[in-house]
Length: 284
Length: 284
Image 1 (tube, rainbow over the protein chains, first blue to last red):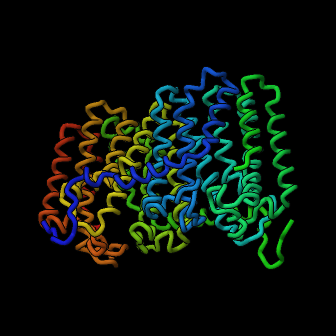
Image 2: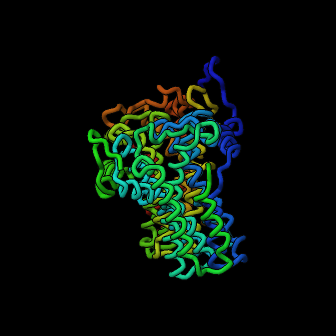
Image 3: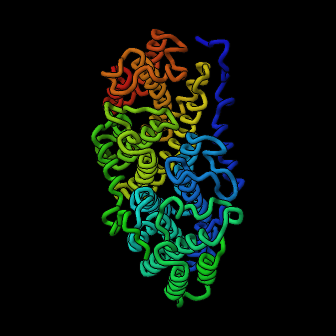
């Protein structure tokens, strides 16, 4: 056995084992997000199924947040948006290295689907429906496809329709999936599921418009990420295409329309209504 | 609406839509792999359940190959193993760009789980078991964790035990999952599933040892990838730790032990036996 005396010898698996990945995951835990998608999932389940279904939303909500987190880690990579700050902390590839950031993202995605598949509180029929919904929304036809369009669009001026289509995939698909997944767990009717999808499309778009508005209004210190970066990077934004006032009016109109869609859903939808409003009336 | 006259305007979503990802996927299709894992899955299902279960293996086998393919695309990235050639073709980040390679890998992973979850030929109970098995094997405790250990080990001399532990995660977990998934579809007993896992551990290790042997024996032209690269990159290999002859003897012993484990499985396991032998007695 060759063991040159000047190179460190790693004695066993325990000494190596995923320590770097564990440390990277702990780094992510230090700067949790707003957990908007898990909250939407839970609120949608309660809206269609009542409070009794809430306990069943835990694993799926966590899975959704893992997918969102993995997408941020990969989007921040130098080859993608090249961001050094996220939620006021160094991004993962800055705090660790690019390989670790890629692998953490990959592992988080796998963990998300494992969480749903092994959630014994839900019947297998619901679990496969949840995996299918989340996978489709996060893949080529959804989040991943949207991020690719976003990369290709940098330095180009998009039409408003193209920008909306891009964000419908990049952010809208996962927000819509959050509502649909809640609907699956809450036992939504086909009609209710369709309404949840429409609500998702509305608030997904509103969310992104508000993001652009905040991006222009805030500075780096209060936002915890590099500000005005999309515009500086040559990306089209709702503000650059519509102007600030029109963008804010559009977001408000989308918010109002979303609430109208569930106007007759009764008290069980109050939490969902409150979330929709928080999502638009936020300042970070 | 602002549209500076000197920048190209992308008119609509159709003009943008995932074209780059579609092209990148077509690039991957040009250099298909040996499909070892799908073959193992199918052979394991037939071994425990007979020929009649083979049709039910299609989606899961495809999913397994998608996970394997995504891992190769990500492993080849500059931040990881930095490989320019794979199966005789330029790697994806060379033929396209790093962002596209990261996104194609991400999308392939999502697609793998979507394929299993939406496979209506299998009952939901089997589908959730397959998703759970594949996700666990490809995540932090399996393939992703192993690749992280591999990255951390570069430039260090590992003990043989540490190298085996690394490869048990990096390659062994997915090969074992192939057999387990076949067992799930074929309706394996608990005892049969345990045997399949043991067989997986044996042939996973044998596979990696043979890889190292081939790496030393081949040159770049016949192998279609940069040769002797692991050793050159300062990675420990079975050949560098054991020597060429001992490595080959070890692979043969593992092969023989794997066959002994299923010696009394009857004719239905013949395909699995043949695959195990092909896997060790290969020259590329």
